[in-house]
Length: 275
Length: 281
Ligand SMILES: Nc1ncnc2c1ncn2[C@@H]1O[C@H](COP(=O)(O)OP(=O)(O)O)[C@@H](O)[C@H]1O
Ligand SMILES: [Mg+2]
Image (cartoon, rainbow over all chains, first blue to last red; front, side, top):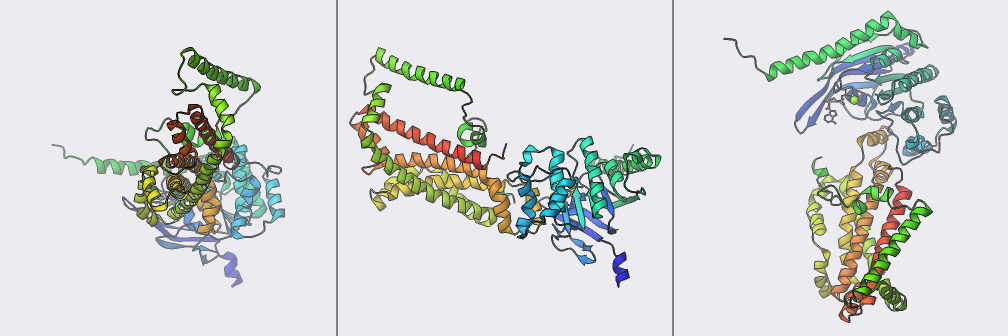
């Protein structure tokens, strides 16, 4: 039994399918997505916008249910938000009327618990935000705000960290900095991470595996291994291997969009028989 | 969902431009502020020129007092007759505070209910629209018939005039919440009530202040109007009585008091907005 547990995936996504019922009809957002994620693994998800990445992540987080299929966390179905899962949203998503400290306390307020001061201080120090607790979010740069969001997400010591295009709004230098920070934190905590990103570079630098989603309906089209030891340096980004992988993934995303566009064109303009 | 957004925003004029002063949050955050002594000196100078010029013009053209009294006559009337006017100011304030207090409270509660139960909104929206579009002054003769010449008809009219304004603005505010922040709260298992108090309410605060400001000004208008319709007290009553006796300096003194009252209300909500909603840039 212990043996089974030790090899058990941290997260299992089994045939995840979600249909949105909209005013203009049903929309199949993700279709039979399946993947097992090992404890301590970092998996990135890339794909054209609208390919259902956020839909998949929200299902994993328990923020919404699936039409069919299931999500298992440590072998148990996820039916709602779980404290083992930390979430970092697109843009920092801080509450602008609260100070940084109050933003970090927010989850504890909701749960009616005392914040773990020592851990939060450690985190704030780790991300270089000590002394900023009394500031308001608007006084912080985008990168700093996203650091606060990271601290907030890690404040419960989650075993899974979900991130939805967390650094999409940052300039490339700040983004690189944040990538290193995530790796450092990962090396400290060995948290399982699922990261949605539109930066193939970021995906490759951070992950053990990169998942490529296809455009609507969102399906897992390809999964690539990224076999580099950690800590990684930016040097690896200039290797032949990474170069090829980047191009492959780019082709997969762009090719998918082009072929779908071609189908749409064919459907839109019926081919008239040449006379 | 589309029905949930159906309440039109009456605080926004159809044209979209103009009236920034009363109806837009920028009025609360970027409102008047005297930056330096120099600014102050210019403002004072312009005021002196305007008032002095008026005094001069009225004197030169020998405008009779019953048409338009001179500024200094108004000032004198304001000082000498203030003890006579003060009790009426008190009555107007009682009507305004109680009517606006009731109206704002009911408006806020209704806005909260409507936000949580969109179905309720469908039921009450027509009545709210009716209340907003009908001048409540029209009801005052009827209310007087039923309640007599005391405070009651006025307080009811003020509440009916200000409540819907507060409600509509507060509803807009409660609705404005972006789904990311609600998702954030839900990801920590927040209940509907927690989401309301910790996300919706603080996000709505700037709009609530706008609603309170517009509502209280509407309340003041209605209180004074109702006093003019009937009953022997209140600033509105003074206006009709002074004008019928052609005591124009006193008449304008009352007008001045009303202006100051309106400005004080505006400044009050401006300061409240600055204090509690300054996070909104
Ligand atoms: N709440 C929703 N209701 C209806 N349709 C939605 C909803 N959320 C997302 N969609 C649609 O589902 C598809 C996938 O969206 P999403 O998961 O946000 O994709 P991505 O994150 O990859 O850009 C899109 O076509 C989007 O318009
Ligand atoms: Mg997305």
